[in-house]
Image 1 (cartoon, rainbow, N blue to C red):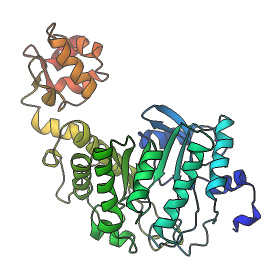
Image 2 (image 1 turned 90 degrees about the vertical axis):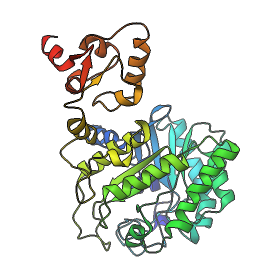
Image 3 (image 1 turned 90 degrees about the horizontal axis):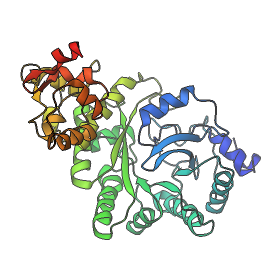
Image 4 (image 1 turned 135 degrees about the vertical axis):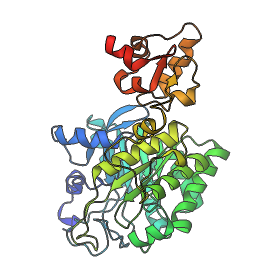
Length: 384
């Protein structure tokens, strides 16, 4: 479809449909996707309810253009795919369109991406110009998430970090070899990973506040969970990324991968669970219950699998364990662990009910692996 037959910018947004459904923008992508399936339709299909550091927001997920000169094998926007409506916005048009629907109370944030036309640098300029107009001309101070294009220049990356609350550049593959199989025209190290290094440097040297994320396509080209989590662990610990997103591969018609088998959403979910253990719980890759093929079991939470193997015979004493040991117990997260440590300074914790009062929602999940003053918490639970 030629976008010139639909001159109205709002109508063009409607043609995007859920064009960026493959681009999670919030902090809880699995829950957001499940909620979207049961929620009444939005005024525009490209508006999504997402979680951000400042709360849930209806967010416009838009693209400067759905045309693209790259031929990524899995992507609905790849060059030559006739089923994709090709629409394009100028920076002025995008900024004005967003301002209009934002003032109407339909959205509270913008996720802005683009297909690549005339190279990553030219495309990045258009994204930055749209954000600049929003910030300066329309005086918009709300949430903006900007995509960093492959091959963007250093100063463009800096400007994206200055304008946005969040910036992202998708590695897509866990390694250079996996990316080459997914997107043969992209260069893992020189076009993508280097930009993440720049972002880390800019945050460290200039104190830029924008958080940074990336995304992987899971399962299309033989990648393993071990590979994906190894790269994620490096990104968290060495480059300070806020999070890594995982997109379970689903075949798209008129692409070279259209006949491949879709990847289980459960695999994506397990990767998120394991990723959070690396990022927030002090885990190492060696702690993960990988199977022989390098993947996580689908039928059990990785934290629970570890606990069954390591804590069944040696449960954790709530009144003596350090924070890291508490975080090994299923059901205990950072907030609950901190509450336990703080409470122990004033009193001993002797009953499962005390744990519930400290924020442990699923006490039954944790008690098989806990001692309360030397007594099995699970036994006390049966009397509670």
